Length: 274
Image (cartoon, rainbow, N blue to C red):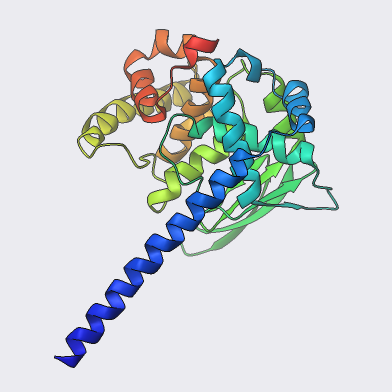
């Protein structure tokens, strides 16, 4: 009997601590967003993010609040002697938080650090072939999303992606789409959807479009989506997210069913501000 009582007490205590922790986090975020958005940050948005002033006013205000919380909670780390400044933080945060607009979110809860290199960086990967031989491969990357709390970005590619919001290529959007995909575990092209019933249509529509892109990549036929998206479903989701935000009209015209799935997931219709 005593053991049962102790277990109940510990359980109630754990629940109380969890609720208290969430309450403190919510209260802290309210305090952060109650502060005025710094003028210097507004100037950075004007300088680096040409899409910002095309957003509807309510989304501009929402994005500013998201940026404030994101910068408060995430650590930015410079690599190869790269200096982290407010320009770096705001430019990255503004693009990452586009994916959070209108959505119930805990601000990429697994993410702790954003590592920023001045330019493309080299990653050494190992893979084992069918005969058991281990090969080492050197890849030059513009960005990378890790499952365990880190995103790695090239500052040069970050600026290039922000400068042209209509070319369908944005490394920050790409890597943070991976973060959304990784919230329920390993990236597989199926992020957490709003309703369980949504997964059936999501799987059907995305699988069909993924197969089409694989066919285009294999035969070199034109595609709205970068062939890199044919690598696997996770890369496909990240690639189509870039195009969804940057070339929504073309996306909708060529892939209306797929566009509707992303619009339902992101709770946005970027056509409205393009």
